[in-house]
Amino acid sequence: MSSALQELAKAIKVVIEMIHPDWVPGTLSFLRSKPGGLEQEPHQDYQEKDLARVRKKYPHCVPGSMIFALEPNTNLRVYTGCFEAKVDSKARIVDVPVGFCVLFRGDLIHNGMPFTSTNHHLHYYLSYEGMRWTPDVVQNVLPEHGECEHCGVKMIKGSLFRLHCFYCDKNPKGPENRLKRKSENKTGEFECPVCKKVF
Image (cartoon, rainbow, N blue to C red; front, side):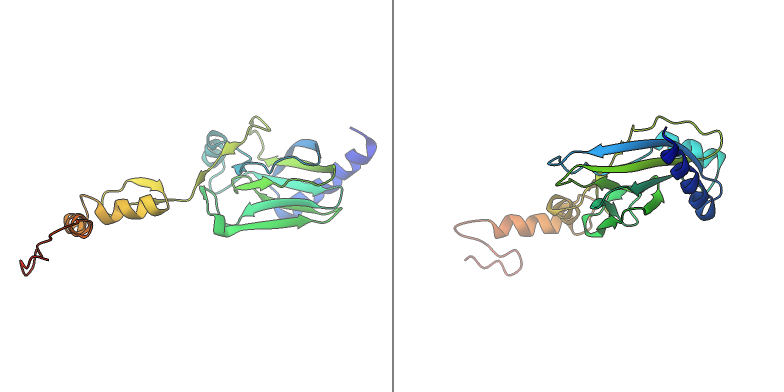
């Protein structure tokens, strides 16, 4: 590591100690992003097994990550408050000015943005004393999901999820909803189930 990077690493360590004294700077990655690349897939910087090991040894603690901008237009998309599933409405783009860094929880869902020109930045993993993990092995994330209030099935939120809840066998109104939908879609003569009139 060059003397300039060594000095930068020392300065970053001081900043990290002020924010969270228990974080131990781990792997420092020097990244060069080429222009025209694709946006990264949303991910977390630590796998669930690594997060679980940290929680076991250090209850209520989470490892962290840091991005340090060496050039302009260093951007990061974060999903504010999303630690289990990404919620698109909570996505925010963070612009990191040159010479500044952004620190965040290692379980925060985020992704790198595409660049229009070559960009150099640093990525620092921040863990705890005695904790080992494999850097650069990230955890993919699921889109926002919901749980049926009637049967407990978990599905990606959307129209299929709403239909499932509406027609769910354990929904007290499910059979009624199915019958109503079936009769609404009938063509030709139709007998009203209430007044028995044929239309």
